[in-house]
Length: 386
Image (cartoon, rainbow, N blue to C red; front, side, top):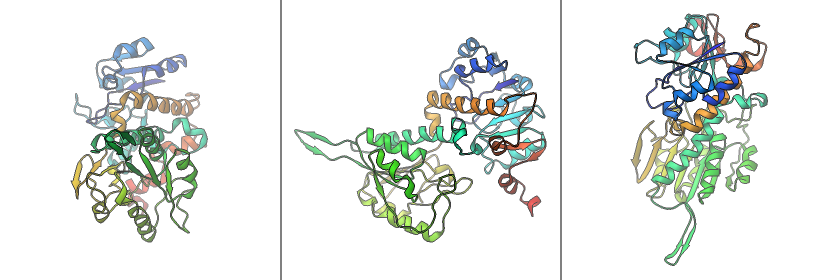
């Protein structure tokens, strides 16, 4: 197959979907790789690196789209700057696309992929199962986000993280509270511990207690009779009463917290508000909140995506696309994820896709002029579901 790698068009996106190191393996499997000149520049990957790996480097995105059977991207199709055309229109009808599609935020893109009979695979919808772990880009990017969130907090906090004993006296360690012990939360815990902070973590799922404690953090328990996780082991949306009890449990720790990193998200829905404005008021002056759920509305009531809000003496960072601030590692990890998924989907391109397979079926949002995912179809075409 001919695999196309265009530049990312979203402002601030520094990642590239395919690293030169991954090109070699694709070439060995008799695929062709066509890369737009400069596609890897923001990740410090030169055109020469791609050419040495065996890719063909072309000067424009139009040439990539015109030649490719399948496009690898990080972000959903946007507008190609040179032509001013939507990237979906540049995709040849009947070809394929692999990348993040954010279907609930981009319904028009999903409708366009359907209309052009594009087979669209969404990295967000790769099933969270054991045999798909190496394809799980959400977890890869969450690892980077959790790490960077703590560095942002350490940089903004007007005190040190570690315990320090000096001739001038003893400096107590900072206290970091991590809300949510998924992939991002666990990486935030590990990073804060490495920097010497005292770390506490809250998660409504008791099953993550062992993981939290294995990283040296204190797990904050919460009494609940409700099942707070899905069958796949992830947090699920719960009722208002449960949320109120979560807030109460968190509020009990906030007066002594110097940093709070929030990571709680519910797939396809608004993030739960775990920290209200009244709760911010009881935090120490100079404290920092880094909200990794900012793009989904935020875990803090005061969060504004892409902004730093300072209120009641607390700085609230609405973190957006943190993996793009670490493009070297992010591109390396994403490249591994997307190539592994591609290899699985197209084991034998001549035989076509196997929709009996759980991974293929789960990741595919559009195919042959249809929206195949029920949840996405209900969101994108609600009138047709009525």
